Length: 342
Image (cartoon, rainbow, N blue to C red; front, side, top):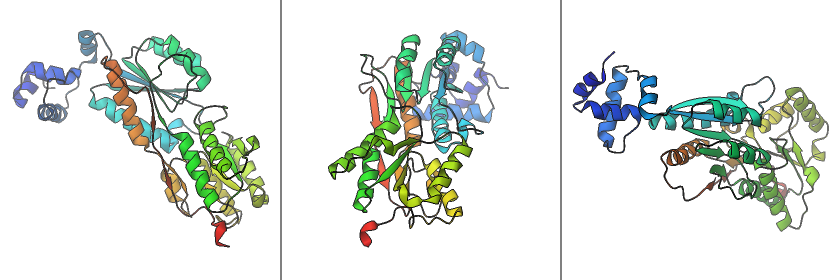
């Protein structure tokens, strides 16, 4: 393997410049030089000595990413398109900054605190931390932390978070349903907790209905089981009497697509017999037929934004906006019946 001096000679730069690129000290390295040196490092298959880097900088160059969630039964977290997309985006951005990613999944707050204390991390990303848990975790972690898709109590702590305008997403989907003549709906939540993104989306639905003088009762909010057998049993109940449920508003495209396929196999017409919507606008929404009306979010951009915010914190830079809520937009396809057409 080539040495740093050999890499420097081939690139026409000093060994210090090569070392700076390897260690991520690129503030004084021009973009063209950075790309040139990185290309030569790749062509030479240069592998940095991580032990030497850690000793030289007194840090690990490792960013921890913890997915705080309970996966669906018999599946891994990364099988979900949202998880794989946001992880891919974060890994790519982390690598651009000259860092490495360590990933872990758990739904145990004590394990998060323990891992954050034992891992030698330069920064930490926490995804989907429940509102009741993030205060405990933040108090126990003394390194830069950015949350993703989390909600927070008003406890005086400035949490750094990259989230979504969830309430707006629920509002837009419900307003569209109302415009199409729908006057009832069942919100199928992705999470069992009473607060957070799903609750905000449901609140948005409630706001749209209230504007039309319609009260959306609490019983219209129903968490979807993580167990596929229980979900199939529930879908069977819908198939037996679809008109009793109104429109099905899923908080995740995965479940919406799963329900559509099951109901269609049972002879239920979508949207003729029942209308279905989703949330995320991932690959499932585009593969099912009819195409799924859903709410679009830029998952890849969310991952990029989270790493950009974390890198500012790692470098000690100011982050003017602590809790960023990214925009959403309605994606209208063919899974909702127009009841105003007669």
